[in-house]
Image (tube, rainbow, N blue to C red; front, side, top):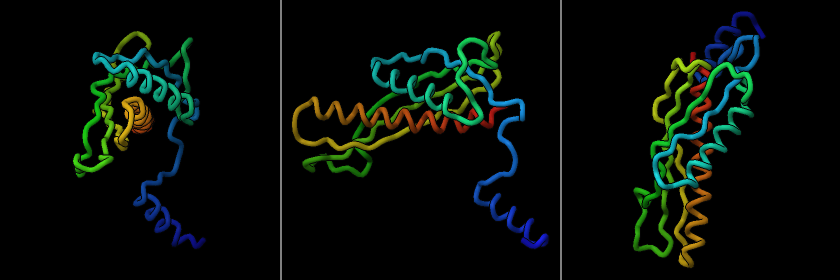
Length: 166
């Protein structure tokens, strides 16, 4: 590549969201302990889905690692809301209307002595599911699968914010 085109190429990549350099310092990934999920509602399924998704995402991340013994920081996640409702464009008169499961959460990154280092904005994860005619068990199964997918989406979005947190 021509030396003259290199800056133009880098500018084009930057416009697409790509960056050059490491996400975390060379010292390695940030070791996080994930505290139990703070959930004040009655949907224990959603809390379990969020706990699993957040722990999994922290463990899989190239810039974070899951550490319970000697963490660098503690990640506390609060499940604000887990709900499902008719999709905004759904027609409830149809035989199988579309619903949307939504999970809203917020996280705090604290030092190991409890000093708050960073607080996330509210993060939302959504997943659509259909209300097929049939037994209530099949509807509940579809709702639970959608909640699990919404939790995964919210955990991915939260992890992206954590990566760039101070």
